[in-house]
Image 1 (cartoon, rainbow, N blue to C red):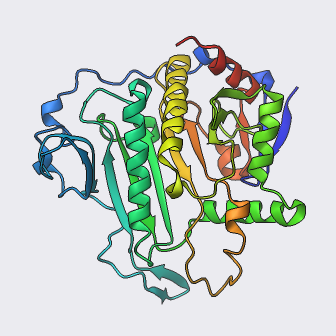
Image 2 (image 1 turned 30 degrees about the vertical axis):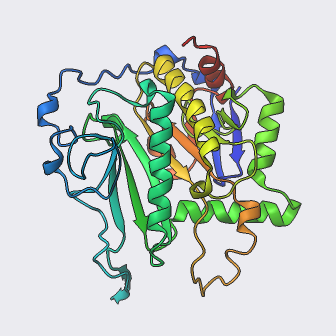
Length: 344
């Protein structure tokens, strides 16, 4: 029997449709080229001259910027959506509002290995990547014109990746994106009504209920949300309250790397190399906000950073696009069970 579930975090309704239940092998198998030519890839060691000058890198001692010897490397996007040189001025154009294309758009080259991806990273490699995410976020927030930094990863053609070599992206914007603002509003509302962090409550409930847990360690947990928008959606968060990913400690980075390595291995083996989008949702930094003078009051108490993983194995059609509701043909309980029980 189908069920309509409400996701408080995103203020969305989702139809969980067991009559249309799909098991992992019912979804398409995604086989990406393994014979691509690394020599033509601009992200390969020795091809540093094909990218803009590096901004940041984890390197072997004694190696110089824009040369081989790096383990994770960050460069400006060659075809940026936003540019730091532009001005974030708001203008009227007839009945329309326009803001200059100010911001930043960076590419994180996750590994020097052309054929390595998150599902076969070591814990140390995953930790270094998370470290780079944290450091770039902190650095970009040093520019007070930047109001939000979104770290995200597209894996596979269906998820928007244009190159096989594993990479992530970072986009910094001059205003808070709508999805982030909506989440802030929902979390603030819950805190004002109940005096607690919503995600702390959600995580406590999921840990006690156990049906949707994928994997946990001492500090972090991964689970399929109760109202998962897409099949096999995974939410990753800390068991302790923390609002800002950029403040994560070295010890916490290692624990998170352990969890993420396991989660991506499970996802890869269960769905046989699915395309996915991953992003980090963290609190916005405090900036002048004349329209909402109380916007940041108490935010450290009610916002709880988390990571979302959205496998791109189903297609949104007219109902989802036209109605704003979603139909999920695999219940989160079934998805979590498949992921939890897969042998690595």
